[in-house]
Image 1: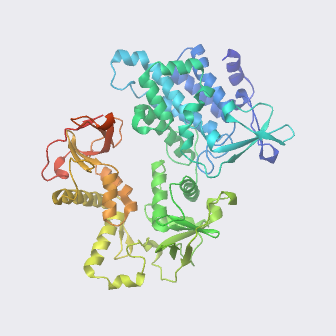
Image 2: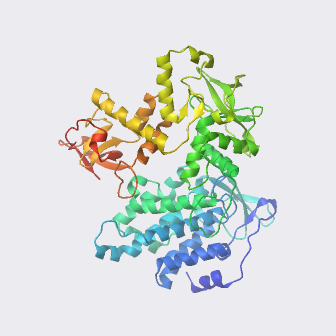
Image 3: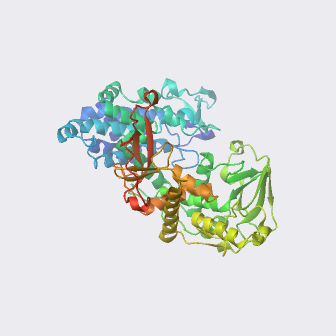
Length: 566
């Protein structure tokens, strides 16, 4: 990288990037792409954070930054989520790089090494953080987007082939998102694109240390279990960047104020299009019938709230009826008279459920009709049933929904058992029809019920301990609860398998478990059999460790000697 490029980047007049007619964009060189004031500021921050001689910065950092900019041009980072506008990919990526480089300064790398080793390899680990952050989304233009190149007359001349390198200058381009794309594929192909962005000297440097190379590749491909602290640094930087762009909290260069209703519909689109919320089958969260989408009311609002909180948003209402009100006030929901909630029978081949649902026009989720999935092959029939007041609106679970009028005829014992299980799992009192305030008390009760279930299961023998496929093991650090399997078992025992993640969160909020070295909840143990593992294969058990054995086991057996902490 020449010094002339540095002078061009920071010494020339600012270039304003404009959207051309026919919604096409010009293919720009690195100088123009990096001349945006915010991008320039981030490049300078990176230079200050890496603290290497000028010629090293040009060759190892500025060169791949420039190539990356030419590769992604003004493509967006997502279709309907974060950084979705022109230039979103470049803006998001450099934001992640800066945040990751700042976070890296708080860590001594490699972890647990001697001071001499840390001092010797500090710049190599810094470069690994930089490269992992820079390339974390590089696969999206290849597998998630289709770019059409246009000539000077704005007529199509063919599709851009990302495998051949950046787009040719002197052209224009238009982009469309690929329908039916696999959302994790962009991570898997990242290593195949590395040589298109990083200089040979940089790759050679990364490969010089096997530990660095392994952690770097694991981070690029999304293997959080083996990426270690490098994956944690880049993952957190990515999450904070996303949250900030969507109006969440964090230290920022500039601020965005996004209304709650926009956050809710953006998150809903994201969770559905990414496949996190399933549609059109038994047990799904919603069904597309005609031009409307019918969404299970409580499940969908809980999912929206959890996702927004995880992204760092604050001020999210804890009561579902308040979120219903926001959606209804801004015309996102199709109301049922004056209320947000509908009761509908959803019927497929061989199954039927009566549920409380929200009704949303499909165009709210898929603005482009071509992007809609195939419609539900069954039926969704609204029911003429009295609906409780707005602040009492709850999801009617399968355990009691199939025949609402028959609930009152159930035996008192059966009804009490069902209500207690559902209350503990969902935070709703089905006797009063009122939703509990979500907070420490309800979560604490949920965690207590889970622990009691484990103790009872161990005492009765329905939960095995220290055996093959057991959910509970004794280890030197305490009691290992295999996660998420044991939480899913508990949720299934209640008849509400979908709430297992809430049980797990409530349990972790009790803070009776041991945190891992990378500040996560999960610990890994390798199985080493005395006679040797079958075919020499390595088996890992992962779970949450409770340090106080008496909380889980009344009579603790001997420590499982075949498990060794990794």
